[in-house]
Length: 551
Image (tube, rainbow, N blue to C red; front, top):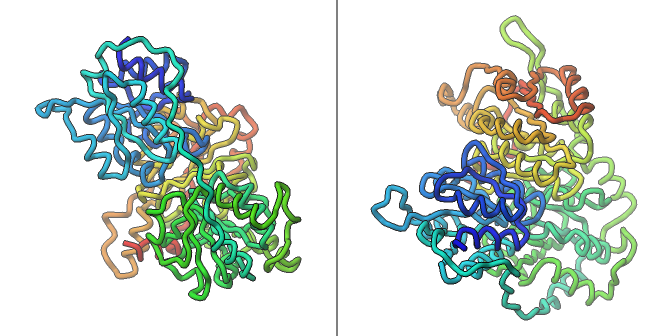
């Protein structure tokens, strides 16, 4: 048996059932080995799209994503999506063939490349193929993006036949988190707030019971939106996307516990959201994350679920816990305020849609568009948001059913990753409607993956917030009267472009134009629907102002 075949079988043995990529000579055998073992290969149009698909798949289904690319340019084509995954700590294995001869035109320094973007690097050896592959998969499962080097000569080497089981991991002794200082802080607090981040995505149940036990309000970073969906004490996203009520209540907290969140500038509005008088605690499995974005008063090392469970035990709370609303500042009056004013849908605004004129067609306010879509689309949905000036509108006005229903491709702040990430999410959850929210710039960058979307025939709705510009730059540089010709574009019929790829295309200038969406939703949804929404562009967003403050 050749090493490439061992690698494919071992990955399948670990549970890999989907692999995304573009096949060339360097990854042909390992990809076919995965398919022969029973995995499904999803062929992308470009390696950059394949990387984002694997990323979106892993985030949505909570398992390790697999990316398979050719050596050299296949790896570099995937680099932006790989970087987004690494910065998001997406569990992913990149099958990266290596041309190891320095004079090869395919040669790149893979270990250096992985280190440069924050990914782990592992390499398969001919004599330890199963062990090395297993180690890479387990590292990914712990929350890392792993570049797995597959030297071409090693892939072709003949090794002993392998049929499983996968090599066993070396057990690590369980440690009981030290929670006494956190216990004291929780017991002393009168207005506690929990902010859960990416590292708490699997901890809804223990964190909800703990919040009930101490009367805490619940909030999340954007990466964990949906974690506490449906909870009456959920303030939703903290930071730049926070509602006025959420900002008010977090600003009044006397204790803020960050669970798996580094409290970056987005989550804290550059430190202005959390009051200086609040006692701030950071809980994380990685001590290197402590205090990286702001000073904290107390750190607790440990997995979020383990720390929460240990704290519940010290509080004497069983699996059911006390009833909702126990203790803290939870009152019936506050529950009513959160119910009535805790969503952006309930915050008044002036509709800035524009009527058609002789010199300009109509445009729709992106808030009005998003609210109308929220009413129209089924609740069981996955919302994937690309980067750009528009990104707050779908993030704030489109509800999601749970934490798996929101995919936010913002760790690297790259435009153009959302469409392909949505395809990966749709593969992970074909039972849900996947909504890709993109700007016109990001759509044009990634439109080639509509070929993949049509081929997969998955339920996919693409909403383009089309302001005929790179809106972030327009609103950032325009007020200072810089010339904007480099970032504005003539109006383009993006719905026609989508139709050319085999999708259903729809141009929307008012909410009344959304009627065909109902018909599409009622049908089989086997052809993607792309909405080219011509949105009003007269104002910049406050989250954009905060973003540029961080540059």
